[in-house]
Image (cartoon, rainbow, N blue to C red):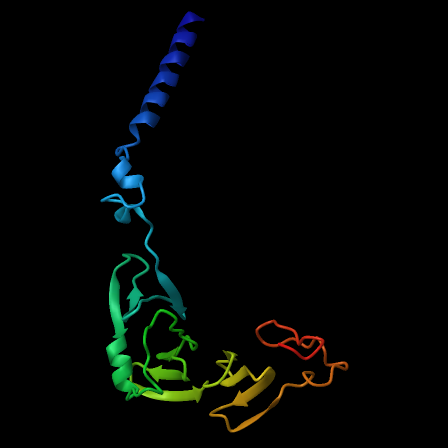
Length: 197
């Protein structure tokens, strides 16, 4: 019985000592205090990630990278300078960053980028603009990759534009709140009961 107690005590002390030795680095005040000399390197880093089909993409301010799922290595897909070059950027088309770049089609090399004036689809293999839509004067908008229609709010009215603003009309149920009220938009929203957005 004494052997079992001593064996149990020995195992407990061994387990305790291994858990204490698992901490290789003790933090200093310089590491943990805001404004310390090493504080910045202790903070988690932000990454903007999206998917292009099954490929993981990191979007950054000036570049988009593909990330190898097995090794974690990054390879540059395209840069901001290249996108602006392909788009023949002027004030209407100048893209300022790639952090919110979207890859709407999993089987096509197309990226959706934009600025305050336009939504732009760029084919980064052929290095050209595929499609664009003006969003000037819009309070809010949501673009659909299948129909390329944009639902947007302008002067407190909800509109739907197909293709490059060929036609636009108030959305059904927005002005008359009959049986259409509560019809869901593709993004999951509802029309408000008083007509105000």
